[in-house]
Image (tube, rainbow, N blue to C red; front, side, top):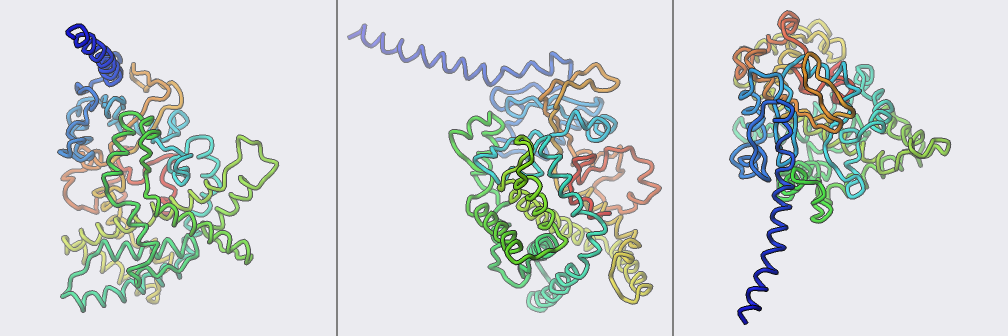
Length: 461
């Protein structure tokens, strides 16, 4: 009996010890990287790397990146461990500019994990890698120009008129208070719907609008989203087991059906509109239906729909957030608000009361206000890139290996008083031509920069 018990313990402890040893080695096997490359870094903790407080909910990723950024203020870059994955945080504007623009060919991909087979709607312009990213980008860029924006003024004005009617109704009903984020979300949903997809969604008047409902669902925080991100940071292979998706199935099913239906309707009824859907359909003809195209250059039907999905999802959220923050700052800063109003009234008087392209390009101070809003409230906390080849950092001994992931901490840079004095204050004059000329490139990145800058940024033209 004693022998049986001893053997049982040995048989139990031995494999457990082996498993624990392998797991521990897996968790710490990357932790010597920055020391070996003589890159400054914070000592990581097994499994969590530098993310323990983020995993425990004590820190937001924004706070985490800020702490690293400021801790290594004397350095051009620093090593970070997101769980066991080593990232290079780049904080020097010149190096950032090189990576995003001059040496873009070495960093063309974002390096953000997604399983395109399990989640086909993630196989889009945002997450695609070269060469497919470049192919679809070239097909869709003509849809995002100042010239195209000119043709959309009537649709945007119509949405704006409905917005103002609803604001008046809300103000009369709620004692001079409105929920700006919600109403701007409805407005931006309508603008994206009509301008990009030719759909009159009427979300502004319909609280049950499915586009608004499922659009909000995409960005709703949940335990599922948190667990998925933790799995990706530990090892993406875990997602093959737990099958956690980036977006709720109900939302992706709805958008997949809606965008497919839109394109099918246009084909069957021979409808041609000079909008985003038109360019998607052209891309479908050239990249999906073209039988002469080599196999490695062909796209799937799902990739066309995926790019419709990402434009809608990214478009309505970033637009509504930017407008909401802008209105918030104008409410807090009456002198700025008065100056914006005065500029608009002056230009309207010169333009017979008409809002058009010519009027908008003369609203220089409003442009500064929007730029300052995007500095204080950038759509993204950070940019991510992945090295596609070995790269030597200019004027440095550091050699970045192929596959190395990069973090560019947008928010921390936007709040660095080295580039923006009193960064917590809302000062639109920072973006006058004279002030912009004083700053280096690479310190204002609300849309990213270089060839992979957010495609919607072209609307700013």
